[in-house]
Image (cartoon, rainbow, N blue to C red; front, side):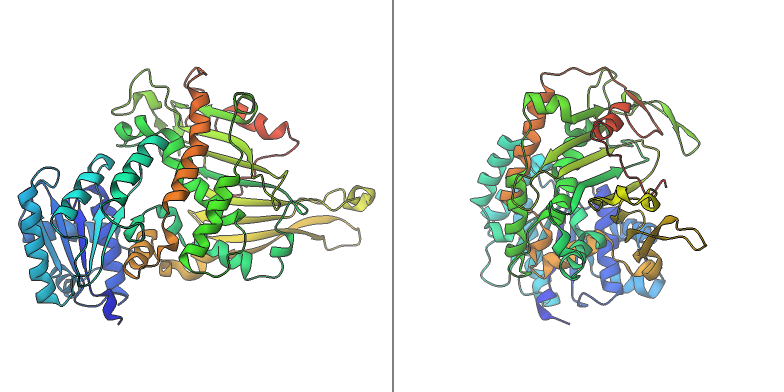
Length: 497
């Protein structure tokens, strides 16, 4: 085991939902698979009064419910002895930071972690800067021995201006190379597989351009509504919850140029070039190429679903978007003229996240009357819930007549490996400890993604919509279908096919 992985994982927001559902179960899975050394230690910080034993009992239930591995008493005892809880108000108690630093140094000595610390801010964004400032003023992020890194959850800012201010203030306290901004989609197995499929197969890269690709579609549909996140969603909407981070990150992986190597900065350099090339929206292009939506009541999976405006902590007059469909372009040499269609929505009729690459039909193919039934060649990358991909081609049906049928060359990764595919947070936490920043968002990536989002938001301010405009359990507003069909194309939804 690499001694460099011996470290302390410090969680601010140790009693929150993210810690219970994702972080502690992820660390347990990493230890179960022996990817972390036995002296790896967890220190959780929260404002609720709890003893170590009480906190461990809470985490036992979380691991039992959310881990992908089964739990037994021996495993839990071994794991729980590495979990500690500290109670103080990290938003205002500056003395608490001094006590925490003393405690962490004691843990360093006891568990031989050598000052190596990963601070995870599983808290609301308004607390990011204050926590980092307190860590800095107490000498907790620039110790001479070991390394200290900070992981930050989304959203990073609420606009381009606030993101710039937050980044400016944080960068004065800690170097950019020690900041790990999370987009958990980058930890998903099939997102990482995009690079392998593109650059590991001689079949695809020569065709990966405007000469052969007709259009690119990125879809993220959810059956769920906003659940208990109404307060957050009112401020974020579908733009900041999905488009600004997850969907644009997927697009950069699909559209980036081959990096000079697979080092983190080389990959992120190419992703930034894609974001810089995204065509921004104007008043004219907005009207023609964007569809907004908000779900009303309906039926999802046979159960009645309330309208967004009836959800907890949502205004009954809310104009927050829960659906978006858009068409844009990447204005560079490789992708010039290829339309990029993106859609995402809540309370849809299927749960699926996928990327579809639709190839152009052969020129003159319509002259062959026997080929009238050919379908488009598609490469479909399935991100969730099923992981895998398939390549759709045409072949002759068996029989005496020359008739065509579509054939799918299918690879179901989640079928083949079952429980062996790591959760996104497992991968992200491990790579942050390893100091692999390629799975994390660099500041300039964020800046250009915010510029794209603001070109949309600026037009939102001048347009009014009557909501709701689609029923829960449907495919979204009718206008989203019109958006692509007016171009002579269709939305591909292979999860429903």
